[in-house]
Image (tube, rainbow, N blue to C red):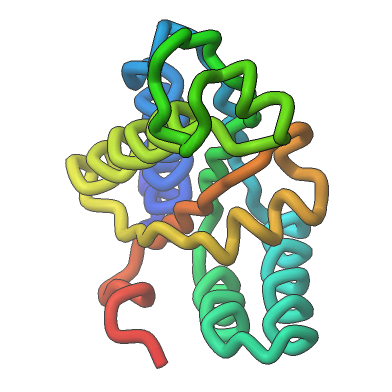
Amino acid sequence: MKYEAVSLELNAAMDAACAMAMAARTAPKARGMDELIVTVVDGDDLERLADEMQRIGEARDVAFFTRDAKNIRTARMIVLIGVRNKTRGVPVCGNCGFANCAENAKASGVCALCVVDLGIAVGSAVSVAADRRVDTRVMFSAGKAAIALGFLEGAHTAYGLPLSVSGKNPFFDRQ
């Protein structure tokens, strides 16, 4: 039996995406509370995501959103990782700028521990992509568009990690 590179590369990208999702989920989290939302998008939904990124870029005159939308269109799929903004009930922390979690919640602040958890999860996921030699890049723009489209229901903050299996990394020297 003969296997064409195109199907092998697509399977490898999906395997990497699954492993990246697992790495994000199992990454350490403050107080052991898991507020992550992880999903993988491809096909028509990937195109919708790129369209939303381009729309945001054009509407707000933010060039990197439209540049990133072009990159998304070259990707096989994208791993989306978001986090819900939920305080952790820490009596003394202050990393968010408030005296405690109760003050943060009262002011509708952003829990710093949630954002740190998201960063650790993203770092874990991209390390899996690197280990599997799948090209990726961390994109705030894709996360923002994913939230706007409802791909990560309940997420406050998110990032997208597009995946490419090609002869040249399309996310490296971008214009």
